[in-house]
Length: 195
Ligand SMILES: Cc1cc2nc3c(=O)[nH]c(=O)nc-3n(C[C@H](O)[C@H](O)[C@H](O)COP(=O)(O)O)c2cc1C
Image 1 (cartoon, protein in one colour):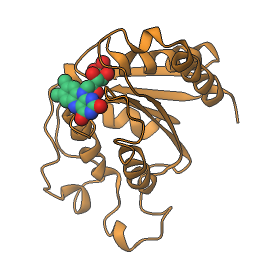
Image 2: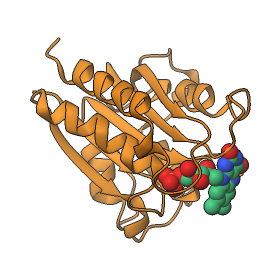
Image 3: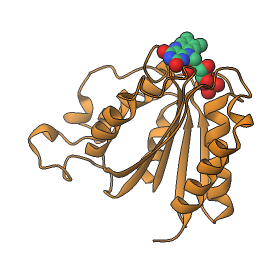
Image 4: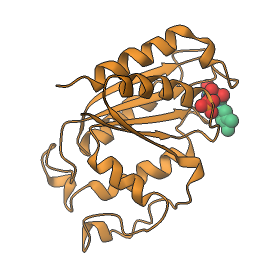
């Protein structure tokens, strides 16, 4: 059974990125996956403090807050779904706060280790980025996914997928785009299928 963890990065619980992620996750659950969803905006947590304890005395992040169970769940998952709106050309602050804390997944001396040995996570995990973008121009903000795809590859996310909708601004816009929801469901079924 595939273990899917979904992090909702938007403050809007029924926003476009959440609706897209939900379509994907429901299809994955319907295909037999176990899905755990965290709404980051409801959690209390700090960004990475740069203390580097996770590179000296500890094997995990030593902050104890709302992200602690999230980091544990992601450590064990097969598929990680990161859903976010575009905010000022970036992921939301809520999601960036989580991503920075995944620094704790990297071994001490990670920069000098071969790719594939840098992470404390088991390799072969799958990353799905779900992006809701208000602007209709598809050529804008295309840098978001490849940047995080590259960085999270270090953590052991060796396969990655992008589900993106442009021209979705108001809550309800993505729900009115059947082709977007169908793409989400198709990907969810594919990712939940046994290897
Ligand atoms: C603070 C803020 C910043 C935004 N910045 C951008 C942006 O840089 N580019 C863009 O295309 N849309 C931008 N938007 C629009 C959102 O990306 C769009 O409304 C999206 O559908 C919201 O997703 P959600 O419903 O999942 O929250 C911004 C919206 C807000 C509230």
